Length: 350
Ligand code: NAD
Ligand code: IPM
Ligand code: MN
Image (cartoon, rainbow, N blue to C red; front, side, top):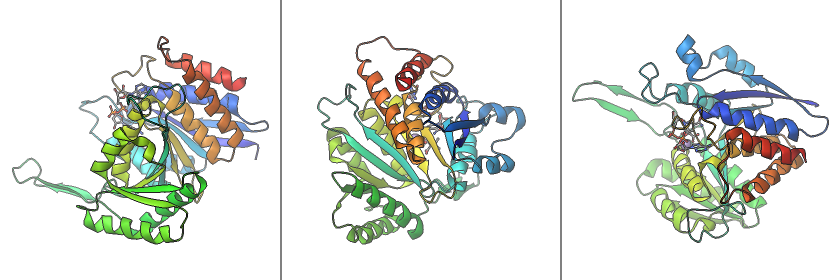
């Protein structure tokens, strides 16, 4: 169809700034005959503080009717007494991921040519983390009793279902099959989290038997952080649970040139709902409103969005424009957020 309905949720802090640049680039990248119809949703801290609303059911249903979602970041000013910690993260971001069944949280990582890694000799780094997006300790299955007393007791139960693990593991193996190295690394903590760990290990083994071409490897999460910093080029496809995937992808971003470059997609591979694309980073209150944020992660997330919708050439054009822009950055003065967006958009426009 000629029009793509895009729900745009800039959110909080630098989310506003980087999303403006991603939209700028999307507009010029639109393939011939395709028109973006963006609908802006003012969800986030400001709306909550003004109205008490986080994600009204009616708004969720409206968002559901779009082809894809572009999100900036969620998270208000730290320490705001009117904003309970996690309220927006859980009520907006995680609610979208859960309600829209984004079970594949796709986080590619590579060292682009010309980008300096903090590692002296990182090697050829190009891997993708397939982070489970709907389970683990994120589901809100927990609670607290005797709050404020010496007997205060809190739990956060990590949920691992065979259904949830199998679907994300199948997706990860399919991705490994499509990549030249065909290697899959399961990251978990099966030496301690023995119940959930057993589900992951068994399912990776079972699904792996259907993929004899794919080499399967396993690392405990603690050891994985060692290899992520000493030998990141060993990774090809990583499959992991929700929390380990959150942590390892910030580290992966740091190792591959910084959090300002790390893109992600919250994907529903069954395509029964719109998938959601967002930078890995948050609202960065420390630099918000100053035009200091790097919009590259948001722009690369827009490329992932196009790729997901089948516009592979347009996605590649954005990626090439980003790579060209990155090549000129070493040693240059830092640019304002909008200047980076303008430069990349100009390259996309040709
Ligand atoms: P953060 O990613 O916002 O910031 C971590 C550090 O990285 C900060 O120093 C920040 O200035 C820097 N940084 C982040 N993005 C950058 C960019 N594009 N360019 C340059 N520097 C950048 O993580 P945090 O400080 O832990 O979290 C801040 C808030 O964001 C919290 O409320 C958190 O819950 C939320 N958060 C939201 C998302 C999301 O919406 N997907 C992701 C992570 C954190
Ligand atoms: C991310 C963020 C979120 C997560 C938070 C804000 C809920 O850190 O997208 O990486 O933990 O998934
Ligand atoms: Mn994170």
